[in-house]
Amino acid sequence: MSIIFQWLGGGRRSRACTPEILHKKQPDEAPLLTDREPTGTPPQTSAKVTVRQLIRKHYPQLTQSERKFANALVEDYPGAGLATITLAAAGAGVSTPVVARMVQKLGFKGYPQFHQALLQELQAKVSGPTARRAVWASEAPESHMLNRFADSVTQNLSQTFANIDSLQFDTAARLLAGEAGLYVVGGRITRSLAEYAFTHFQAIREGVVHLTSSPATWPHYVLDMVEGDTLLIFDVRRYEENLLRLANIAAERGVRVILITDQWASPVAGVAEITFNCWGEIPSAWDSNIATLSLLEALIAATQEERWPDARERFERLDRLFELTRLFRKP
Image (cartoon, rainbow, N blue to C red):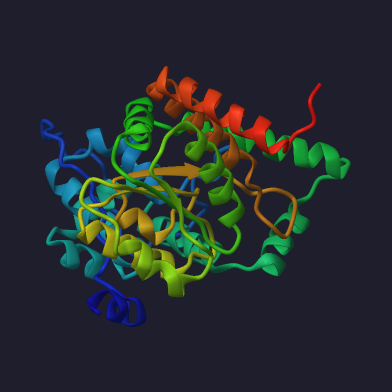
């Protein structure tokens, strides 16, 4: 019954984990910046990078005090950075100069610019198809749609794979290939990706379960989840509360959560053991799943290799069943 109550009422607050890395304290050489500075324009790259990803990139260079604020921000993201610099610093238990120096190390001119970047992320997370189209339409070059689309997709693929940690990828492949149960679920837009993942993982190994698209049935699946199982979740903007509740409940039972999300990161990232961010902005009212599908196929290939030669024997048994059912035309 407690599972059903959590489903209806919301589950526990999500947690984000940013490991503390021992680092020699650096001199506080940067000039201090305050709330009164000009806002300017957030740092620009070939594809938009979130503040969370900037923190991950620059984390080893931060002092212990700066990491304290970074950890507080990641734990309550982006809310902890949407207040004034004074309130944000107080909430993390650090001084305002510490916050000012940290945002500079991330590449911002000052806190107002940092604050603006977080607001833009928040707006991007909740934007619908109409708002998304307005963004790219106002900046669209004069080239043909096919060229603009190809450029965007190429950038998305490059940015996605450049931001994947190889050790994290290998860990995910081992979890997906393990002997414990594997559960796969997606949302309104990503359920087709979840079904694609299930079809391939189920051919590679046994014990794979695809959760239906109806959240009302999910407690039945959670009932069978045990500690050590793996839950693969797909969630992109606009993020679904039911997936966050499912992740929280599964994690509390010792299930290891892997999240595949977009560049802004689903709230499930606060619960997931492993998170993969996939870039998807294209000249359209919708986001693209090409980079997401490419990452998924890479995980499928890695999982297959982890299970070989058992996977080969399973493929051969499956082919014999296809012959018996005469499902496919023979050459």
